[in-house]
Length: 448
Image (cartoon, rainbow, N blue to C red; front, side):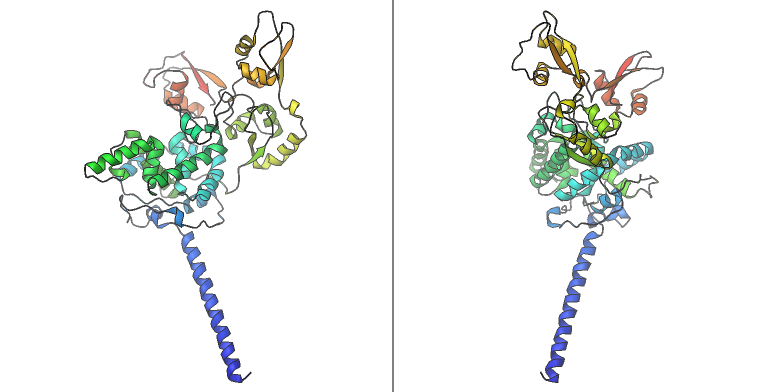
């Protein structure tokens, strides 16, 4: 090889190295850019507002997910923000409304702590805006047992029919709308489906989550027929739906700018709070809590879907267990026979009794007794014994206290005392929120 050729080869090799380095630098720059806060949340980090209410929304379908380490849940959450900044008086009003109750902002963070990491996993995997992880604040104040007057239930407030449509089982034993695992998957699926329905307009999708697709389509048609704007902010909507999106945007902005608003953020690490354990069979929840070395009330916080003191004999067969205790729980579960996973009472059948009478006595159902005793039919005989799972004699999700109203008590005072909502107290006691409470009056408080 000549010296010239040698030099040319060396130059060519150097050229390739430069090209490769430039390519790597460009690729690294691209990734660094994507990791920066989305332009759609510029205002949230203090840069001047430049996105109007009618500007097309960002389609997250086109953004490749990037696995980035974040020390806290909050850092991870804010990195996933993707909704446009909106300069709107409705949002400003909701910001001021939240800021008047700083203790509430602390309380909802504490309630959200067990669930946020898992919710962010679902949000990230579905490539939907990070702000949607905060939707349970607007829906249920992160109360897993929340039940509305219209029978919507759980963190995500699924209506019964919508829940069933998305595969959330609901029966005497179990309500999948309250299952943190299944309901979060269903809610994020539903929200993504709604975004496609409304051409990636997330504000319309959120409005439809609150009011239903049909009502939002009807409002859009009405405005278009009158030659009016058909974006969310211009639609003629009921009051609840008009405040729905502004409340989500308001809480998202407050949390992202917590220092500016003098709101302390709780330290929530970006690590799993719970593990999902396959239990393979029915189990008494008090036994499960003992196996998990967890107080029963804390165990219900992670497993609010089970309406009785045990899991459904027909499944689903999963429980959420604090991550630090999951391995020990699995070990104890594996060493416990299925017949020992339930607590039983023995009832001696009296003359004239039938399964219906016995079921009423123990606050259970005939079907539960049939399954628990492996009976083919309802024929029973006096003098024989029938087994009653002790967990069936109590309603685990609805274990309640009786509160005696004191002079000067209001729904708000009592709700704060028991960490529940005023409207839930009214619902549980079948009374109006406008009703004046009388000293000495007894109120049922569930799950407080």
